[in-house]
Image (cartoon, rainbow, N blue to C red; front, side, top):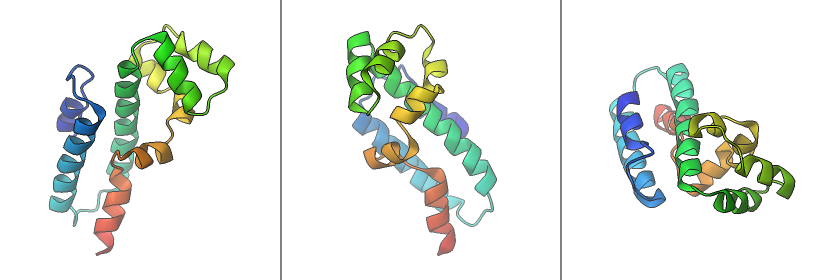
Length: 129
């Protein structure tokens, strides 16, 4: 599963957000329906955390330029000074995606509202039935 998720969330695939969400939802729904009887909550929690980190990295790379990063961080509710500092970071995509400011800007609830799948929520929903 992790190999396929890594392939889907590759930062160089050139897909837009909509196609990424569709592909992720399709793969994860199929995988979870197939394995819904398995007891895998702990594995899914770590995989879900890793997947959110990958999604943040994907989004950070898509913002490409400092101006776009600044504007989008401010849009996400980060104050202007911190947004300017973090927009100008020299860190790589993966390191920046794990930073506290980006985790606050693109928190789990915001990612869910945008339509990105949550493995644990889907597992709980399927496991109850």
